[in-house]
Length: 256
Image 1 (tube, one colour):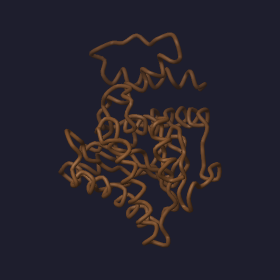
Image 2 (tube, rainbow, N blue to C red):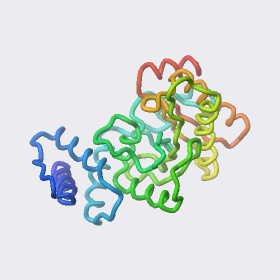
Image 3 (cartoon, helix red, strand yellow):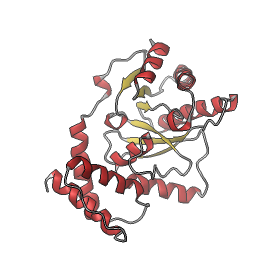
Image 4 (spheres, rainbow, N blue to C red):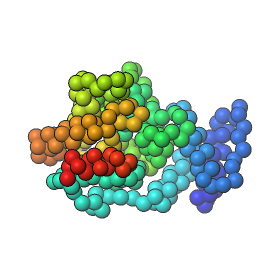
């Protein structure tokens, strides 16, 4: 199969799963990719065929290669054991990347939403939601703020994904909010250390959709990571991954 043929196959498979609302496949590749992402985003965690998984795997691996994979060896540390990188976290081949998840821990169901949860689940493939679903069925309760769970990364270039739920800010930031955000970073580092991972890439947890002020969130992130690394000799190296120019400048000032 060519990449274009894989794309059409995956769209048709997902459309046929829910044939109540027939959708015409767009002519242009960009629109087809957007449709595929939407269908993956809204798909409930349920059984899927081996053929789909095989075609999806080939498709996502080629898309990953097209975007370009970034390893730690491509970066220069801004401080000992700490890197700062601006770009798409789904390109990083760190041992683990951190996903800013919601309490359901199943990924974002809003088609093509701009959150990192949506991006990570889309690039990893439908298997990630299936694994998260198994974890949550066993847990039987929503994921608490400040904890962390680990899953495979599937078609991402990293090895694992660490999922953590940050605090949602509704008004003024409280001391408890700050403690909970710090717990997110610490829990991820503790889990990574337990799995003997050498590198972890953090997104800007709780900013954006969860409304934690960017500068305050960055201060907490940097302080928590630095404290953990000082207290733990075998702490993983950390990449602070940012996407927006504003966040890059904030972290650069804090670390530079």
